[in-house]
Length: 149
Image 1: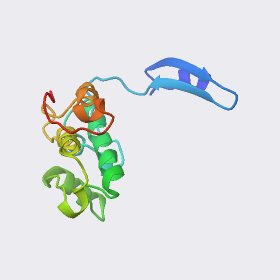
Image 2 (image 1 turned 120 degrees about the vertical axis):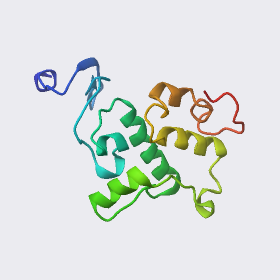
Image 3 (image 1 turned 90 degrees about the horizontal axis):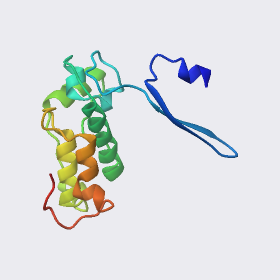
Image 4 (image 1 turned 60 degrees about the horizontal axis):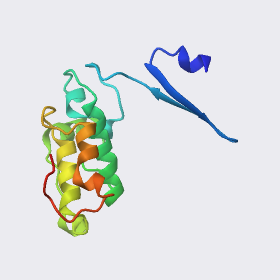
C-alpha cells in the first residue's frame, strides 16, 4: 500500500477489496482537470491529444469507443503501419461502418459509437452520457432510437 499511496500519479484511493486470492485497490489515476502532452497507445489516442491541445476525461470515452469497435468487428476503426499514419487517420479520416461487416450491428450501437468518436470534444459524449445512452441502459441491445440525450 505504501507504493500505491506514495505514487504521484495516484490522485485518490477509493476502496480496497480482499478475497482469498487477490487484493484489489480502486484508485483514481488522474483527475478530470485539463491535461497536456501526448500520452497513450497510438491506436487509442484521441485527436486532441495528437494535436497537442489541452484535453480532459473525454479522451477516455474516445479510447473506450476504440475498444468497443474492436470488440464488435474484430479490427481497428483507424489503421496505419506507422504511428504517423495512425495519427493522420485519427485526425482526418471519418468513422465508417462497412455493410458486409456491420450488417448485424444495431443502429443504436452505431449511434453510440458515433457519439463517442466525435472529433469535436464539445460534442463528444461524456462518460455520464455513455452510461445513459439507450444501448448501455438496454444491456447492449436496443430496438428503438428515441430519447438518446
